[in-house]
Image (cartoon, rainbow, N blue to C red; front, side, top):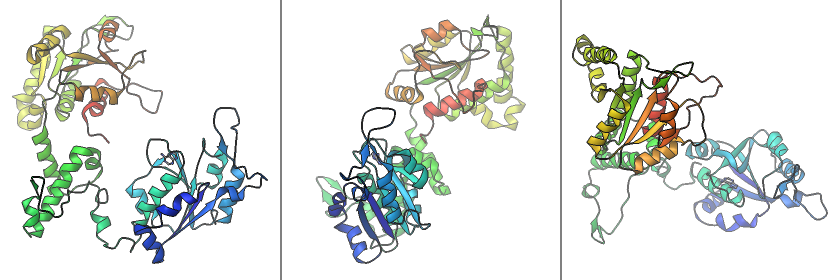
Length: 432
Ligand code: ADE
């Protein structure tokens, strides 16, 4: 496999690839690495490679002609080569991409400098734009080094032990289990006994368990992304039970005071399906309690009858999980009552979070809200308005106003139960 690097600083690569695994692989003929100085391809008598951006602005842009000439010279237009531009705006590099790239015969890297390269090079020559993370480096050279090292590890024979790439963090989709070596005792800590037992089956099981525990704690998104075997799913479930924290997030579905279409303040009717679906979502995401806020006794009786159908009546015989989903669902006469009930339980008044389909001035993003809830032990009450939304006074008096849930269309008419599920997933779900 051939790696070709187009750069203004070829000397940067000399020491990096002159030792270790990569240098040995080059000596063994498993791969080759060649650098070419983009400046050598400049037709300018001063060997200029950059210029000011059209339209103004700070910094310099790499000119297209030297890069195009370099690409043509090194086979960048050949069918068997893949041209990769390193830039902070590219797709984030990961192990899957490394593995895929290792299947190519020739990779050509363009290392950008200054404010970037002329857009036309991207349009005409670049097959893939890669970034190594959400931060800006002073040039693509550092990114090229990291990517080449990681791709090379997938080339058969590059790593002495064929198994080591299979066992590593990320290769299995999980983080690697903890490793120990001699001495058996170090500063008062011993190596886990099982690793000294010589029982390979038990050691493998222990390692898998530790891998899952570590991934669950540090990178839960990886658990979600990788299909696990049944045993692994059981391990994850037992971790969820073990680590289950008492949630400080309460939710309420408010039927009064809300707006109707004409922006009059009204009481809306209970909707069977909203009550059941939000209760199910609440249980799934582990909220502390779900309050149904309605001031009208007849409406409360009606919804109580529906809830009893699922918790005691025929519905319970038919579907027992509905009872579980309604276990923390309560009817409340008013928003103030709801707040007082929570205050009595928690010893402190909950902070109020509102959701609204309309944008307003001071709104909180989901990531920020999630971190606030996770880092503050005090209670939060998240309100979902029915009808045309919560009245202005509630929105303005809230502690946090979440940004509207938006999709890819200008059409935006989610039902309250859909919005509730999406919001709960953003605030409490596995981070993907
Ligand atoms: N060039 C500058 N910053 C970069 C990054 N984060 N990834 C790839 N190339 C870059």
